[in-house]
Amino acid sequence: MKKLTGSGIHHADAQRLIDSRRNGVVDADEWLYFQGDSEPVKASQVLLSPSDYAGRYLADPVELDYGGAPGSIVTSKACLQVNKLTGEVNIHSFAHGGIDYRVQFDRKAYLALIAQMHKDGGDALDHWKRLLVRHTQKMSEDERSAVINTVCRLLKIGVKEAKAALENESAEFDRARGEWQRRCRPALDEFQVQPETEEEIAERQVGELVIHRDALWEQCRDIASRPNILDYLVEVQAQRGVVGEAGVCKAVYLAVTSRLLDKPVNVLVKGDSSAGKSFNTEETLRFFPASVVLNASGLSEKAIYYLGSLKHRVLYLAEATPLQSDEHGPLAYAVRTLLSEGRLAYWRAPSSDDDTLEAILVEVEGPTGFLCTTTAVALHPENETRMLSISVDDSEEQTRRVLQAIAEREERPDFDFAAWHALQEWCR
Image 1 (tube, rainbow, N blue to C red):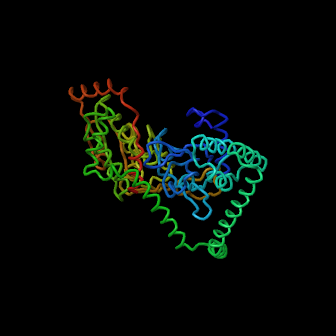
Image 2 (cartoon, rainbow, N blue to C red; image 1 turned 30 degrees about the vertical axis):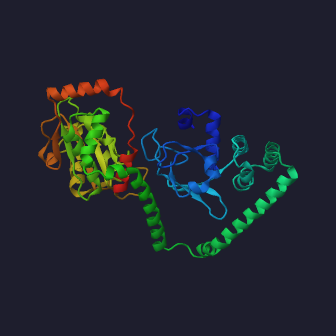
């Protein structure tokens, strides 16, 4: 509710959207954001010409920015499906565990569309029966009766004639649904009798993954097809106001991407205080989904054992101070072990909340990349030998470039990282 009202939607409309989603419905007066379209499309237009949109990818109906930066529109998280026999329209979302939504008219949206078609001289007479029978199941009987009376007045047809036409349309719809159920029944019966085998489950999951990866590829194709992605990254950073640190930018991006390998690259960014090492590092991290990087401004001695799985993720320590304060302490040892062995195993004594008197094993799964910044010239050799060190540029010329970029920064539009995030998801 807070997210919807915060985006400018009236409280009552936001509540209606939430109620519709809980019932698995997308209302016809809502906007749908299809992949490749510069402008959104009203769901009522989709119901009017469903074949034009069948099989197309679009944004998740619940969260337009799902999987992307806040406020963005990620048009690869759902797919519009049309039943060729019945004409019913569903939206299958890949988000939130996979949810199906029926696209439906309410009374207001249905009458608004018919009235607009009639006003524009469109073929309202040809469409009103089909739309009313197939896409208004959420209407009550009283609402449907009121709608029929209004349509009759608007299109100048008799109520008796209209009801006869609806009966014929309903009979055709029931026949189509019966045929669809007849075709599906053997498969449904077999499914109910025999659950999916492990092989079938794996095959289905692979199929879903292929569909998802295809959608991600469409979103990141422009970036992934470039001959030099790192040079393009530096170019984009410059447009965003991050200037003069191509080396840091490329090293950090490569290091975080290497988290997908069995032996990730670990990077230590060095520089004087206020030289821009943290700024440049963190601006590059924005090109990755939030789930990739675990950002820690500090860690207690044993907190690293309770961070959950760090498999193919990156631990970013904003300052190396926790490692420097006790270079032979538990935290420094744990970080070194994680980087070398790709996992952690820590036995702790049971607490009063545990139902055992035996020692308890706490495991942290890797491999894990490590990223850190420091003002120190060097860290302890056992730490530094496990990392690639890179220094930021603190020259007068770089300071001039930074000041100029800061002066121009407010004039730059917000940047959409969705395509870059899709690239990282596609690489997994």
